[in-house]
Image 1 (cartoon, rainbow, N blue to C red):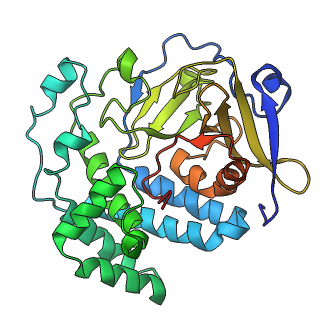
Image 2: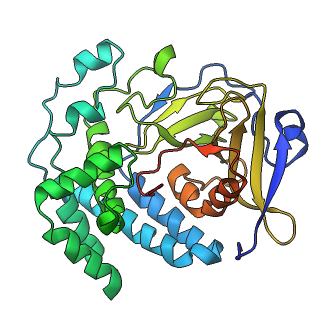
Length: 326
């Protein structure tokens, strides 16, 4: 169990093979892993289970992670039961797919998605399980004019902290947007190709940045790293031992949280880059097969706080459910 105290464990690329977390090594036995993997229709349900499990393991964040698990469950309800006013025609995304462009580009589709229907159904489902304080927040959000909700959605996409008085509502709006874009991934006739060289670190589906990366352990993808989109949850192949921001490899390091016994507290590590001064979290399925990038990113916020105190690296991961800055 992760309690209130934690420390950072450091190791660099050269000595990573000597520790339990073998991040940074090249995959073996896989010559042609799938380039892009679309999320499954039960993605939010899987995330909810992971968040609920993490709420028991990470004691200081238990209440927060429990709420996030409830939110993910509500997202699954919205995905299955909401009836948005707009749906793309069958051929809508074919030209973008043929030309290697993100078919679900956030800027192009932001005004098309029916955010308000997704949000209303999600809030209905969430309201059944939250306490009085959180229910008050839901009521405030329901009473906001539609254009003000839209402004919050724009702030989410811009990774802006937004209006301080409404900052607590932004993760709920972001969650509804995740539902909308994951729904769109289910409408694609096929997964898009791997991003082009100039956009390798952006989601090939919607063009958003990754929340974190995951190292797979299944036989067909063992040891392969994928970046996972913070918005639509699409995963795409990205080589290991390379910074996802500047694509340099000479000054990579790996930081993890230790518990009181000196063991890794969570499967999440921060891959830090001394060349550009950024970091992105890595979750290994070899360490924990149930790890889910967005859920484990939330559970490892202590790692972000410790890195922020050092003021050496800036977070590059985009988690719409986190309001950073301000």
